[in-house]
Image (cartoon, rainbow, N blue to C red; front, top):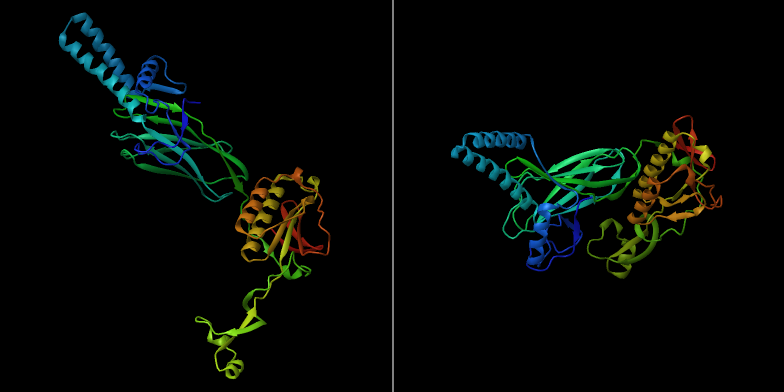
Length: 389
């Protein structure tokens, strides 16, 4: 792990972002010129851990050329050869100095853009900020990796980053398995300015992300489910149904088709009908059973994908009352946050987590899941199959 740190919010006047959670190479301390001079002197002989400066192929050719010219200059005592040697060595020294200065003032932050789902592209964003007052930053490269899937990507800062500016680099990758995934920034590198030397900083900044199950096609016939009362009470709110709720005075924007003409004639002002919203049957998904019922990993993955897809579709249609996981009872789903919490739970579900359901039968419209064949999953309501994936 490199000698890097997370920076606190910068003081006014530095041009730094107002929020924390930014990291930098840790070369210098703010507002401490004497200690910075001492740190720079020490780093000439003992670079921070994880910092390396090595020659590139072009740099190795230049070093060999310098050795040849130096040998020739020593044997012939020609001043022109000593001048050429001095130019080569100074170019190497200048390359190393400018490469070090290219990292000075650089700050970065790894950000994840949720949600992530199997089989769908997800985005990991890297924000790069130039905290220098006068010096721009050029040609930085950042090596990112997804540990579990063994994926890697190099993001490059192809344009100069002016002082006080921020650039955002994006990596689009497609998760291949559900569960937790670790995304991290492994290394920073720069060949600026001449390409003779490459300076690298090893850095590990892991970010844990949750990958939801994939969406799968399925068939569903809810009319086969036994209709009973849904979870909770049906909201009796105004809507576009057929049951009359009350009569009220006309308001601007009301549809003319809702005007009650007889009541309007009696009261000599426009009266409109306000109906109740038609309530649809709600369903509860229950993921329960024993681990021995799902001995095939691929079939269990299909169970998670089928349950997640069905739960999301029912929630969008406003017909999902809740989700039950074994003997934990029913987790009600009302908001989008509730739905995301359910999908997070399905992303981390394992066969060992399954328990027999403790929901009393007959009180709710329950949709359960059972293995079918070697690779399919059936959705069951009160013993009747209503869908399959």
